[in-house]
Image (cartoon, rainbow, N blue to C red):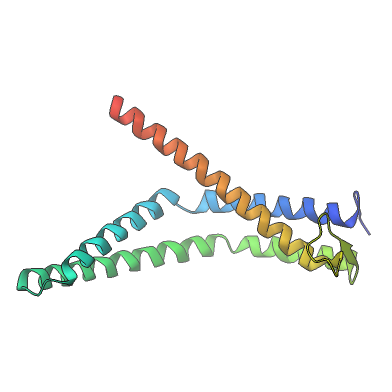
Length: 164
């Protein structure tokens, strides 16, 4: 049985490591710039479609049909990109299963005391729930940090492009 500090801290640290590995895999195998560009393009097309929705003339109807076809092609491309990313991230599932097995074999049915009161009636919870909460919070925090860094780099690159 391995234990570094105590079950609460061990699971917290392990969940942070798993969240970091997951985020690094996503950064490596997902073209986030392409996904953002596709989302921006879809929003622009939706905006155009909303503007044309009230009009009944032949040109507006033809434009709406054209936009619908373009949106379907974009959605298809987006789905292909998402599926490709998901397939590349499949090995990460093996890591998650190994962590689950390791934690389960170490802590079994142990009630892990939490670092902060999540539930007043239960100051301790099953290790799996503590792990899920920690991974969820760590993943959200890392995603926010990653998005902030990408936005800053993108803004800096656009500033250089405008000045250069």
